[in-house]
Length: 467
Image (cartoon, rainbow, N blue to C red; front, side, top):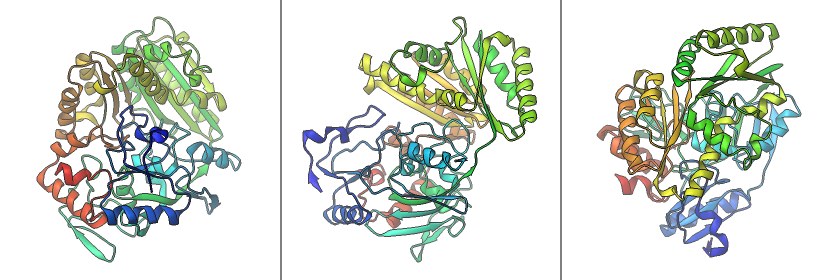
C-alpha cells in the first residue's frame, strides 16, 4: 500500500460520475500481493474499496476514504477446457471475446462494455442486451475474502436454505426469505456463486472463474423498429412479449428522450458511427435481437415481428436490420445511451443531481410501470427490456430524483419486483436499499457480513454504517 497522491486521482471515480477520496492506493500485480494487501488492511482497520476497470454505473468502485484496491495490473490468463473458459478475473471482456471468437465460441450473457473485467461483470451482476446474467453461467469461482483468505466455490455445492448456508466449515444462521428483493439478500435455494454475483465488492473479490461458453450461433440479426408514438411502441412490446423465445433473445424499448440523446451524441460517440440515422419523425423505438442455427426459423420469427409491428401502427419503411458482424455493432445501443447521458451530465455539471433507476418485473406490469414513469419524468430517459421486465431509467435535473426513485422502488418491491437488478447497489443506492430492508433482511445481511468480513473492511463499512 502507498499513500494517495494527486497523480493517482483517476482512482477516485468511475463511470457513475460519482467522485470520492482515498488515503491509500494498492495496485497488486499478483494474487499473492493482493491477498497481502487485504490482510494488511484488515489488520490495520483500513476500509477497502475494490476497483476493476472502474466502468461500473452505480459507484461501487468509488472510494470514501481508506484503501483504493485496484485489480487492473493483476496477471491475466485464459484457457478453454471442456467448454468452460478458465480465466483470471482481471481479464477484460473485450479480450475474452477475441479469445473466444477464434474458437467460434460466445458467452450466453453479452455485456457490452468491453473494457470491463470479467470480475467486474461478476461483481455487478451484469447482463447486457440479452436477459442472461453473466454470473449465472459461472461454474466455479476462486474468491478472495476480506481477511486475505480464499474460498473455492463450485456450483451446486453450497446453497441457501431457510435457515442460512454452510460454508467455511461452519453454518451461517439467518432467516433467508423465499424471494430476494435486492442484491445482498439471498433467497432459499440460491447457489453461493449466484449470491456472490452482484455483491459489488462488499464480501470479497473474484480471483479466477470458470464460465460456460457456447458455440457461436450460425445466424444473428438486430432489427430496429421506429414508431410515431410511445403508445404504438408499448402496444408492439405487449404483443411481442408473447412471441416465441426460441430465436428472439432480446427486445428493448427506447423512449423519445433516449433516441434524442443518442442522436445528439453521434459526433462524440464512436460507437454510433456505424449505426444508421434514426427516422426524424420517430418518437420511440424497439430493438430486437434474434439468433440461432435455423435460418428459416429466424426468418419466420422476423416476419412475425414485422406483422406485429404493422398491427401496432408501424411501417416497414421505418425499420432497419443488420446481420452477423453488422448486427453486433448495433447491439450496444443501450450502453451507448448510458454514455450519451454521461456526456450530457458532464456538460451541464448535473452529476450530483442525477440517479439511475433499475427495477425488475415492475409492480406486476413493466409496461405500465414504464408508462407511469414517463408521466413523472422531467429530464432523463427510460429503456425497457420487454422479455424480462427490466426498466432502466436515468433521471437528472430534478430537485429530488432520489424521492422519485424511492417511490418506484417501493411499488416494485410491494408487487414482488427486484430493486437494482443490473448495476448492483454500488454506493448510489445503498442507503435506499437499507431503508427498504425488513428487520429479517437486515439480520441476514449482518450475519453474512460477519462471516465473510468480520472486520467490516470492505466497501467502506457499508453495512456497519448503514445498519
